Structure formats: C-alpha cells, structure tokens
Amino acid sequence: MSNEPSENRDLTPILAEWPFEPGTINVRVIRGLDQLPKIQVRLDLGVIQMNVDGRPDGLRPNGFASLLEYFETRIDEAQEFASPLEDEPDADEDFGAETEPFGLESESPDPVPTRLDRDECRALREEAAQYYHRYVALLVLEDFEGVIRDTTRNLRVADLCRDYAEDPRDREMLEQVRPYIIMMRARAIAGQALKDDVPKAAIAAVDDGLNALRAHYEASDQADEFEHSSEAQSLRQMRDALVPKLPVSQKTELRERLHEAIKKENYELAAILRNELRMLGD
Image 1: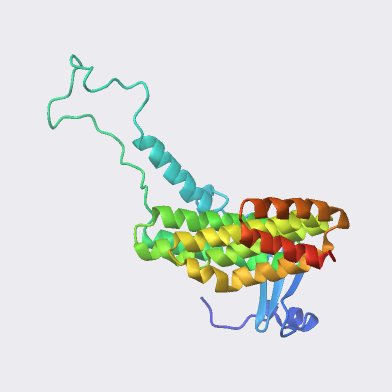
Image 2: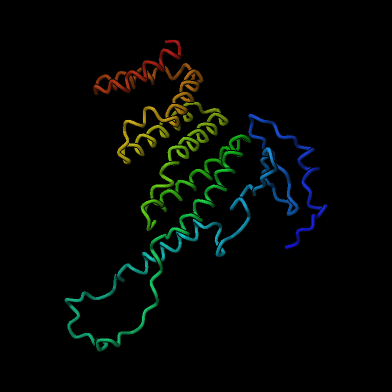
C-alpha cells in the first residue's frame, strides 16, 4: 500500500457541497454509479453510504444475502441432519438387520455446526450495526416499511444469538438492545399507519410494542424495569399524541371496552380507556 497521497480520492468537494448540521441526522438519497438508490448519512468527519436494499454494504457473504441468512440456513440444515429419518426402523424391531463389525462403521459426513462461536457472533453483531445505521436513516426519511424490514431482521439476529451462541456473553449481548429495536419497530409500524390515515392501527401498533417490551423485561426477570425504561416512556408519549387523532365515532367503541374492562375488574385497562375518552373530549 502506497503512502503517497492521491488527489482524485479527496472527499473535500463532496463534504463542502453538503455541510454537516449539528443536532440533526443529516440524510439524503442519491443514485449510485450502478444506477441504484443509495442512502448517505453526513457525519462531522465524513459520509456513510449504504444500499437501500439488501445488505447495506452490498456484500453477499458466502453467496447469501447476509450473514444472518447464511447462519440461519446452516443451523436449519444441521437440525435436519440431526433429525432421525421417519422411515428408519425402530432399533427394537430390527433384530435381523446386518451391521458393520465394531470399528468398521460406514463413514458419515462431519455434522454441520449447530452453535455460533465468538467470532461468528461478533460478525453477526457487526452486520446488525450496518442495518441499525440504515434503519435510523430510513426513519428520518419516513421510509417506515424499510425501518420495519430492518428492525424485524435485527430481532432475528438477537433471537439467533440468544438461542445458538456458545458463549453466554454472546447470548446476552444483543438482549441489551432488544428493547430499543422493539421500540423503533413499533414507531415505524405506527408511522406507516398514520401515513395510511389509520390512527386506530397506529395506536394498536404502539400497544403491541409496549406488550412486547413488557414481555421482554418479564422474561429477563426485570419486570420492574419496564415502567421506567426509556423505550416504554417513548412509546407512551407517542400513544398520548395519537389518541386525539382518533375519530369521534370511536367513542362508542371505547365506552364499550371500558364497560367490559370494569366488568372483568381490569382496572388498569379501565384507567387507560378513561384517559382516552377524556382526551377525546368525553
């Protein structure tokens, strides 16, 4: 590698025509040399460029769309390889079957690994970081469908590491960011519903996100952390902002749900529904 400077690689003209604005996420979409759309994010010291579709850096590891797809396929094949064939006879029933003498058994292929080692988990996290940068940029661009796609995908990464990592530390590492991914996904689904002018669906998306957050903290034996988590507070604030957008015709439905909640002595839900009715001016 030469240490001689190369003038034609200087990014100064690009950075000069697109000044960095502190306090905001500077994002734009351009058309690349391959005529495909690219997302650019302006940082204080440069620019990040990502593909809009597929893996953000455009690579295809091992011929797959991403490392996630590669490892998911590998584990699926390993589990299929390990499963007994349905038409194999029971050992107890096959008394007359011929067998190889001890030590001369027929060779079988090496089993496909069903666990992820430390390097593989690290590579998955690094890949997930690329998708994180993209879905944050897509949220600024209000490409909610893209955010839903990428956050759903990163939740699959968290699931894979949790279920198949060899090292307990790798199983827990992405669990720390799972609440954030859940929150961003819920915001994107709600944003798309608002874009489609369906505020009721937006509120349902936020509620689903809150339920998923609660389930995560309960499964982690941290139920008390749910109420105070920044992700839950963010979704509640979004929900409060969405309630006034409900059409007045939904008052009847809310009253019916309130009546049913009181009847079942679900007073926590009843309190929420009362607040919604008050916000609608009832």
